[in-house]
Amino acid sequence: LIISFFTVNNLIIKSTTMARTKQTKAKRKKLEEESTTTEEESTTTKPQPQPPKILFSSLLPPPQIRTIITQYLQDDIPSHFDVGGHVVGNTIQTAELWMKSPGVLAGIPFFNATFDVCGSCTIAWEDIAMEGQSYPNASGDNKIKLATVTGPVSHLLRGERTALNTLSRCSGVATLSNECVQIAKSNQWKGLVAGTRKTTPGFRLVEKYGLLVGGAATHRLDLSQMVMLKDNHVWACGGSIERAVKKARVVSGFSQKIEVECQSLAEAMIAAEAGADVVMLDNFEPEQLKKDAKVFKEKFPHVTVEASGGITMETMPDYFSEDVDVISQGKLTQGYDCVDFSLKIVH
Image 1 (cartoon, rainbow, N blue to C red):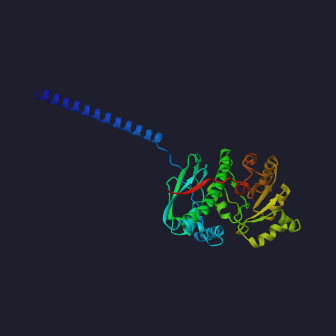
Image 2 (tube, helix red, strand yellow):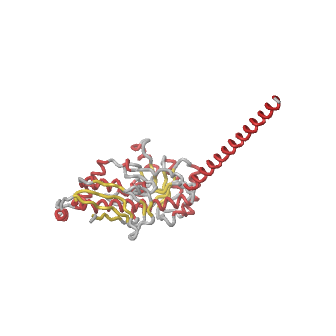
Image 3 (tube, rainbow, N blue to C red):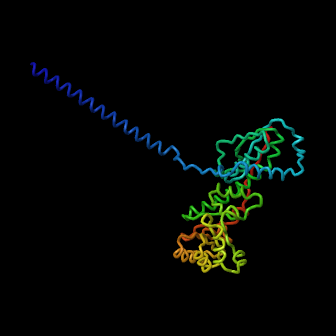
């Protein structure tokens, strides 16, 4: 009886333990399945993180921007009397910035600087207002509010046109640049889309900044940043590319690149042999450009090849080649459409 009692008791304990073990395993499996389901749902429902946009505003020295904006405002009020400002007075009022046509937003630092120079104004930007962000659905019927400006009403109206001029033009450059950059990406071309020095006098910094925000390269900012020897330079030196390059190298040293505008493969070869860092194949037909660029790169793989001259957004894909490093277009800063913005007093 004693043996039987212990035997039965052991069987009961064993049976209970096995049951608990099965329950534990079942619970663990259920938790794992729920965890897996949650992870899958999270992956499918949550938006994937996007790489952060590069912010370029820190490139702009505040004193320089203030000087430029001050010149713009003085140009708008050359006699120093603002009669319209006298009419409205200095009561504190609010104005709202609206985007009324599709495009890429660019030029916020210039907009901010305008009202900073006007004085006593504050700007609150909406969370959706981001430089480099495209707003394809903006229109007159679907206006997008980007910011609110508060300050003396005469100051608001004094800065209104200058602020909108810089914002609309900078955004126009960024929009066209971004369209070209997207075409290059969609064709898997690895080179750089670039602007040129064909900028609006007095608006160079605004337009060059727009190129960057749009994803394009600025090319050289001015005559001092990189040496570019064009056909006129070569002709003025007696027609010798070699002489022009060597003379430029004496003063540019190791810190500046030298680019030579070339009308043929032969000129490009001479420029590279003389020490040019970049050759521009200017006004080449697409097929000839690709052929000559390939021959050139075989001999000078370290020299940058730029294609330029009459290239538009529509014809740009014809020039894509693994042997072409840069495609520049003057139209990016002299043929862009402005993006439409308005600044309206709240009433």
